[in-house]
Image 1: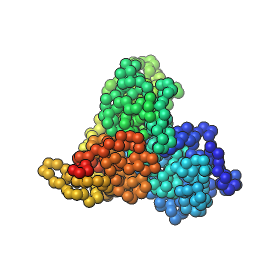
Image 2 (image 1 turned 45 degrees about the vertical axis):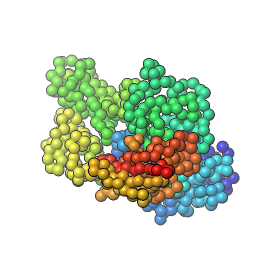
Image 3 (image 1 turned 180 degrees about the vertical axis):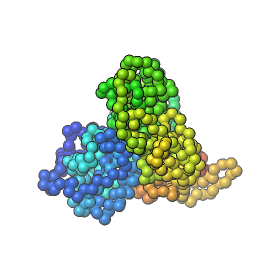
Image 4 (image 1 turned 135 degrees about the vertical axis):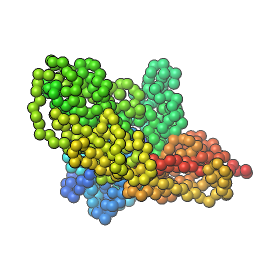
Length: 638
């Protein structure tokens, strides 16, 4: 792709070196990157930049770092950038596996006020060029040979801003640049981009991270929008979620997603074999009808989710620290391992001595060797840390370094451990500044005196909480909290060291507003029914007593939950249901009944009665119970 003829200070070319080749935004075209090279005479972009820690879960060099940049936001518009960041993040955190592994991620916002509002060539090639620090622009950087939706960014400027985050590097970060625009656009790769204010923009981010981090492929059956893809003619794809095999062959060969076949898909339907993907309509199959890698707003199906868990976990180490093991340790001390703490469940720790399990110690992060009655001589001690998440079924992934780490020590009973001056204290813990949700695993790590095992005691609303085994984590789901606000406390036994959290156990409440029906039907024991003889609209809103963007979701007839985004052309407009769907920019939205993504999908209208459910996911991660209503669409002449 060639660069446009813009002025010298905005000269840009698409960077290809090291770029991840991914498809851009619902398959409008394939591009090497969203990056553009910088203008030669641009001043240092870092001069006016402010790095804002949005979420800190640990040192940057021990976490996966998501770095959000803004372009085209003036100083007066910086609150709008912060609101866009909040929305993008909460949509991301509502999506598994990011919801469960949010604690593996640090989030940073880099604020750089723009001299002018907006970005280049928005929405057309003849639109004004804007003076902005990241030189973001539609049409691939104002390139007449590109497409409007390709939103590029100055790669050197983006890297310079990301480098302001101490401890972040290309290997442990993902850059996402948000443009101050309501126009639909973005791209994936090392420098992912999205429009900050478009209705669909927050749904682009998890999809693009699926590419750049998860190495997942697009499941579209087209390469350019509005043009059906040709038949796939190559060999078995290397992609984990595409295949030429039948279900019987997958099972027989124990290949691809055979372990998930027949299960209800997280994105709707069941895991099986659906034709189309990798820009081909025929000859290649994917696991589910519409995962997030095919249609924005749906979940990762189990196959994509498993891949994402592996890739997220590979960016960090399950073992964050441990008793030094470079030399033999004495049998008169306490041995310890510090682990990561997924929000979705506790890691498991299994201890062995000389190859024999120590079941009474399993789960604990500390082990007092004095209680083992060691025979004189040397021994081999190991601690194996494993993530038991049900999101992973492949033993090879489970046993990989991403999900299993082992630490070993040589214990010599002839070695005497000298006294130390380590004082009991908390070292790391779940953040205290924001309320935690009722389905959260909260953690509190401590210092490690060599001759003492520190115990963490938990209480809820002043009452002790039993927490056998691993006392560094407390899974709030086990407490079945009643709705409302609670106070959670962790204390190191025998000391004054204490941590205190506010617990939000009340999900946000959702409400719907529909266009006027022909009639409303109330029947005992059934949800309220609204009868229409044509298209109707639905607007979902949410109300929460806490700060932060609340995600609303809906599903039709038990299909996959879809994040509500308003309408593609206007985030404030209600969602529109029609018998066959509405074609917008060569994609189909709002078909009542069986979803339809592209114009050549089955457009047969599904009249009759449909169940529409809706729910919320708030900023603390609480998921509300689903509520429902019925919508009946009358056939013409009925």
